[in-house]
Each structure stands twice: as structure tokens, then as C-alpha cells.
Length: 59
Image 1 (cartoon, rainbow, N blue to C red):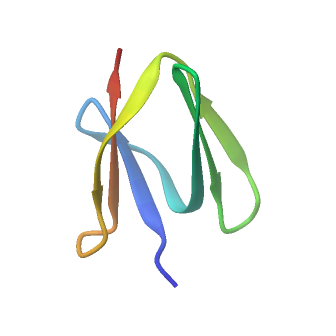
Image 2 (spheres, rainbow, N blue to C red):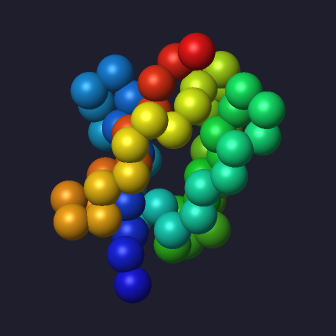
């Protein structure tokens, strides 16, 4: 299984993410414990499986 670190502004915001969904201009992610985090006014700009990185950018 692949868990991602979510990165925004060059900093890790949440680790072990296994779910991500774009909802309009927001991105909702959930980690392996089921904890959810909502990133408002963001978009996904990169998904790197080899580095386990999910990069977000403010819009």
C-alpha cells in the first residue's frame, strides 16, 4: 500500500494519506487512521508514487 505525505508551501501538512478527493477548489484527504483534513482553495499539482508525495498548491 502507498501512503503519501501531503505537501503545501514546501512543508508536510499530513502524513500517511491514502485518500484524496478534489471538491471544487478544495482538496479533502484522509490518512490511514481515517482522520480527514480539508485544504481550502487548493489544487493537486503533483502525485509522485516513488517519493510518496502529494503536492498541493493554493489557487
